[in-house]
Length: 204
Image (cartoon, rainbow, N blue to C red; front, side, top):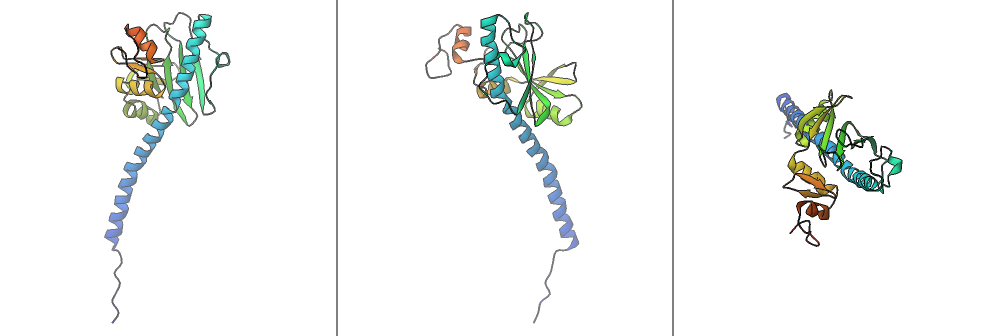
């Protein structure tokens, strides 16, 4: 005796499609956010290479260079573009802004040591009219909105936790008491008036 095979009812199919739609609506933004954060993080070692080269150039010449050709940077730059803004007095510039070619509406802005007000600070800059970019800088990276640029970007100061992470990932040494990133542990300890402990990232 043959039995009738029961298929899915219309209600069951509709429920499955609804669940799939909800999961997709949740999953895609999470995936996009993770991808954007990863791309932002790939700019950190490049920033560190530029900053180190600029600081060495400053020691030698007495000013920062606005021309990357002047700098020795042993780092592949095919995925990135840079904008150098330099002033000798260090009050308002001495900063490099890096853009990832696959993250065009976001910039990593890092200030050099001779900038009197913003030395060592790192910012995520988002294009004003781009929600995805602003979400990355504010929510994903925990940035605090601080300024607007003349070319239409909002600057978000990376919070202490994120700044410490950025500092570590870019090869620097984070001074918690000063909320500042130093080029290495020796410079950090020297600034704190302490001695560096060999083979550690600590001062003693």
